[in-house]
Structure formats: structure tokens, C-alpha cells
Length: 350
Image (cartoon, rainbow, N blue to C red; front, side, top):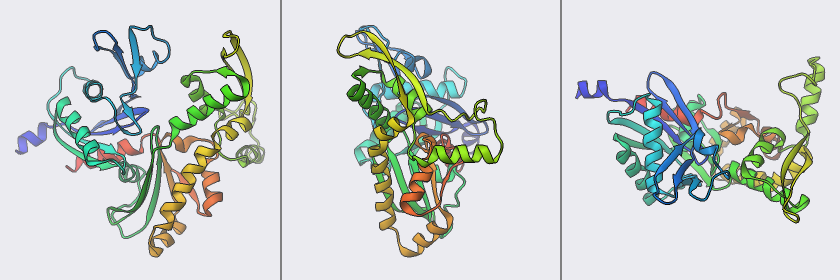
């Protein structure tokens, strides 16, 4: 058994709706690619996976379809997810074939037993020797460096592409939690719908995602704070890499004439477009706080709330949540990698 254990790969996987990250024992995170698969619609054969497949989104002929096999953090297409996981593990290990591995996979808190079994079966079919599932907020908290084993309350809010996972953790377990099927992908849709409604222009989801990255913000105070900080630090705002962009030009299709057009859109408009989704997340945070035992609430007030996931990078989100809850909010050191790092650390101890 010892020899088998020595040669067994230990892998942690953040199986996300938008991106999948793979952690390999001794190497760290070796893969971070979009959870997208391109298939031939006639033969149902896989044409591309990950980065190559995402480049095909909304750009393919009728014979090829680029799809996301995971929806809201759970498997929507079993066969395609299995092919995707198998491809990602092999690429992460830099091998065309790999020996059976011990795999830890993150799942949303609110998944059903049927959804959990689907994830386990996919991993075993992809070549796993042993599979362990871990709740995303627990993995995120471990990956963010929080001390989850002590009798101290820690609150983590992991905002991914398909779900927002909120949990209060103490003594290695989740005390109070909420799994919200509202997250980063909904922000993209908010932006797409806003542009269509106000400017009668249709844009792709990839363009909407890019607008979110550049202009997306949750707090009107964010830009004021950044400008004040830049002035105090005597930064060159115009040439700073962390430039404060408040307006950008986007291109799309006029839904009336059908012709290509372009418009300019501002950060204030984007905040207006996404604020309803942001408030849904903030309200969920408040609900979890209401269900938290008083002693742990005291710890959270002292230690603060930690944000992880891609949604944590939305400008001013920490400022907005702090204003709404009255509790200090921190962004994890590597928010995009927190879940994968946590799953990887757990896999090393299997």
C-alpha cells in the first residue's frame, strides 16, 4: 500500500462553471482554463477544450458548438464534463495518459446527493482512484490561509461564475451557510441586457465579460477612493498600470438595422446594470450573519469577512459589502486560486 501511495498522484480540482483549476501535489496549480468544450454537432466528438474552445464561443459554424458543460456549479452534461476533466488532468500532469489519482473536487454547499454522485462518477470515469468532495467555501477558506480548525469564527464569501458560496466556519466545519446561484455570469448577462435595453445594441457574452473586467464596479465611492489614494501617493494616474478607467467604447450589432455599430459606456451605467445582482449577494451575506451564533459573530466582527473567487475582483465590492454590513472586508491574497489551493492542500493529506 505504501508503494501504491507513493506513486499515486494527488490532485485538487476547482471545477468551476467559468474556469477549472487543477492543483498537482508538489507542483501547485498547473492548469487554469475556461470550462468550455467545443463539439461537432453531427458526431458529438470533442473538437477543442479550455482556452481553444472559449475562443470559439459565439464564433462557430453550425457544425460546431462551444458549450459550458457545467451550469450553476453542477454538471449539466455528464459525457462532456468527463471528457473535459480527463483532458484537463492529463494536461495538468503533462501526460497523455496518467495513473489513477487521488482527487479532491470542490462542490457548492447546496448540491444534492444526486449532483454529488454525478461529480464522483465523472471523476472515477476520468481515471480517479479515490475521490473526495469538499464544499467550495471550506476549500476557499483553507486556500485563503484562514485557520479553519480553531474554535474561531471565519466568514468566507466565494463568488465564482455560476454560484456564490457563503459560509461561517469554525472547528473544521461549516456552522452557517448559503449557496446562491447568482454570481459572475449573472453580472455578464446584466451588462448584455442593459446595453440591449438602453442602446438597442446586441453584444456577445465575451464582450460583456470584458466590459465587466474594465468598468465593472459595485460602489460609487470606489473611484473617489482610488483617485484620492493616487493623489496622496503622488501617482501618475494617466500612465499608471492600475489606471482608473471610467468609460470605454464597445462594438456590437444594432438590433433594429442589423448593422455593426459602436457606443461609449461609462462605469456609472455598468454599476446601475449590475447593482441588483450585487444586492442579491449582499442580502445573502446578511442572512448568513443572522443565522450565526453570537460568539462566532463576535469573531467575525473582529476578524472581518474574506472574499474569494473571480467576483471578488469586481471593483469596490469589498467597499460596498463593508458599508452594508458594518464589518471590515478583505480580499484573499489569490482570490482566483483560493478554492484550487484549498482542494490541493486537502488532497495532500488524503
